[in-house]
Image (cartoon, rainbow, N blue to C red):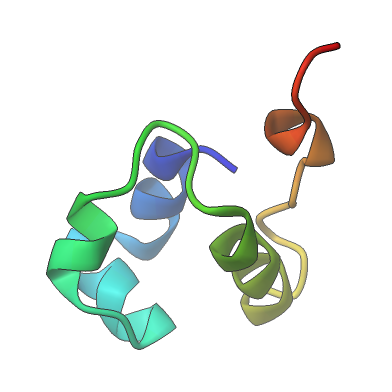
Length: 61
């Protein structure tokens, strides 16, 4: 899941952090692709509006 997509969905980094019950600094530290555990949580939290993409988390052979 891309950080940009998540931030746009929730409105900004602060709202994202509050929705996920995380610190804003933790959200700020995400790279382009957010941590896999958070992506799975977000898919459940948004009832599938944001989708977990396993391809973003597999390492090429």
